[in-house]
Image (tube, rainbow, N blue to C red; front, side):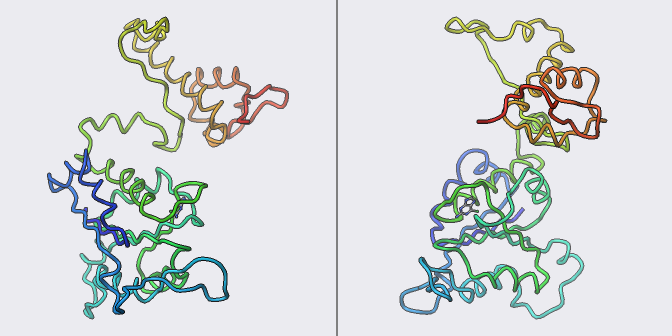
Length: 280
Ligand code: 6GU
């Protein structure tokens, strides 16, 4: 996978040379290149922003500087019609934006199959709204994503978050691919992961659940599944409501009922008179 990142702080992405991402680059699994947006400016001040049309606080990133950079990275200077192979490996343009739909595990999985990703990091009050519009008109797959309901100073951290979520799904990235299968937010039936314990079994007076030491794999699996259901019911009831009841086994239903859920319909629903432990 090839990854280009454009930012006015390209040094920000030195962190990608560390840890598993750094290893993956060394092994040729991915090639990451961070570019300085100011390299595409023409004026002496290397300016990338201007005041908002219509007035208001802050500065907006100019579309033309971005477009000259993105045209080059997208290979759009090339007048020739794209070949079939080029179309199949067409880059996906990802623009972090706090006012966009949330980035989820589903997006990470989908993007992990792309051959080439280009991330453009906005700063200030963001980029000119015509930028994503223009590239969609050029038949580029443009995605705008937010990583959560809070405001960051720029898209750089958001890009690091998305990149980590995407690249760890590349075949050969993780030492043990099973660790991906079991974790939270994978598959249609998303639950928070069960809690984990290591040795010693008794630590500062706190015991790890004895069933985990029983050696009975079926019991361990059931305990973990119930722990996942219980934690999800408490912390993320929205994920329980999205479950498909037809895919729950008998023990799942029993556990959910004991947690105050009705499981006779298509999706679980809170029992009308149940004292649900909702988030404050
Ligand atoms: Cl993608 N950008 C910024 N600036 N703030 C954010 C965000 C993105 N996602 C959440 N907050």
